Image (cartoon, rainbow, N blue to C red; front, side):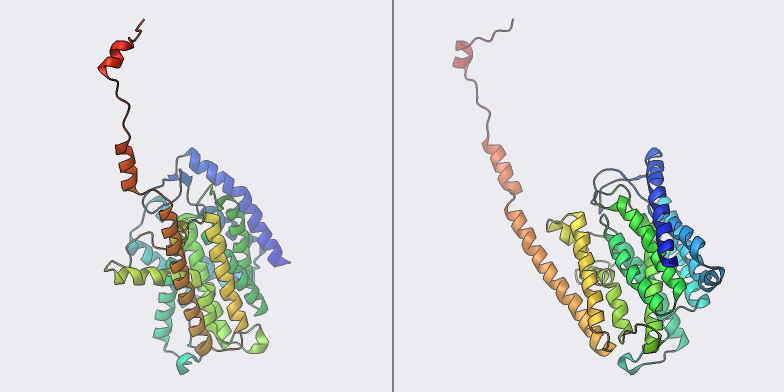
Length: 384
């Protein structure tokens, strides 16, 4: 009952606040202009993450007990830091170093104070225990990479909201089955907040979430997935719904941002470019070039996410030695097929369009009919 009420509270608060934020930003001309790597049309308000995070915090403040707040206090503070960092970046753009420092502070609270970290390889490659320093470094690296990977997929109307809603719903369910109610409440409360935002962010979007939303949500997802991996890897079967391949399951939960980031980084390096150089080579850009609309891309990638969640359910009893190669190879194979199909569709679309050269030749061949002197003499123009 508490889960339902927390979700409902966040949804209604977000539903009521988001139009106010849209009106305020439009009135004060705080709008995101199209151009460059941005593919939207018209001036659209950004920073919709304000409504997502405010709705989340209102829902949590209402339905988390004092004991549950004490249990999750460092995580909640870290969420507040990421929200502030994203808001500051949306208002006045921060440097990459400044954003990295802010993310490291939030990650330190989660790792050093809340003790949410990767504590083992859970038998993968025969490794069960890892040194504390390795645990800290690996968790830091994972949080930073996953947070920014999710930030990169926020390029189309409804896409980031769809992917995060599916992931958080699964995580919320799993935390409840594992007896970790506070984290289940956090996950479902954020689901309610994001669903209310999607009503205004679905194509054609009236508002974008901006870094205020994407950095905050990406951080929450990365931390909860790490917690899922560690607790799932160390729990007994009787304690909840146990996946025997915790690492593969965690990868599957964030397969879209992980695959997209790995793909573009690899392509940029192979082409001699900086892996951090922005471009339009993300998966969602390719799908758009194929002719799909914003909402169709969100459906396709949301469907891919559901397929991988189904895959880890099917392989629940298999360990990471079996499931991790299956998840990785499935992602790479599906990506190659998708890339190939997309290129074929792009070629077909381009063949149906007139080329620039043919357009110029057509224009050059067209001449206005000339009026000869005889015609002018014969047909006197009446200037009266």
